[in-house]
Image (cartoon, rainbow, N blue to C red; front, top):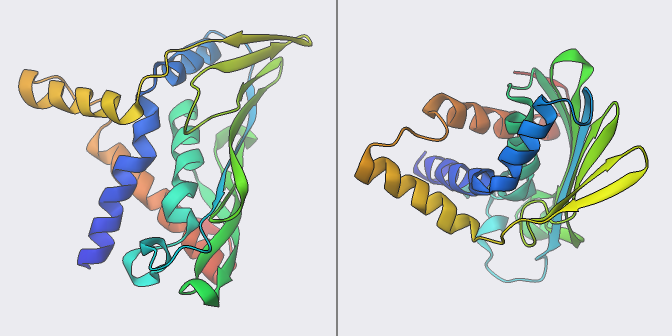
Length: 219
């Protein structure tokens, strides 16, 4: 129980830090203003290879190891933020490795939202590195080539024309820490409610359960 709670705390920190980037607020505002029309789907990927590392905590199933908990939480968190709603169901498939404590070393999934919109994603700790997000609309799309780490610029494509929007590469942990300090020292309201955080944990947990049971999970 202690390990599970500790891992939940890590997810809350990791999956929300990139939400503090100004670009996500900007993108969400542009979507609300109809710049790319109606959202048709979101696709996110976050992969790296740590398969050769020794005594990696991510390989301990009892402590909440695996790619879904570690990095699959990022595209899930982003989709929930952009769509401003919670998923209704999720279906996931994963590669569980006996060499790595039987955790999910790679997973892919489909998370259902309202109006036929879905998040499709994959995450891995045993694959070539990727860190990307696409938000597809009826009249355009947003492309984040470094969605969760690195360069915080993004591209908007409309009518075949691409425009890259630069953004300051401010450390995400700094932004998150500054917001937390404002809440503690100045009484500023939380950027994300407790219920939002708990719903994020439920969505990530349901994804892992779906992969383990090989069935669609209703949230």
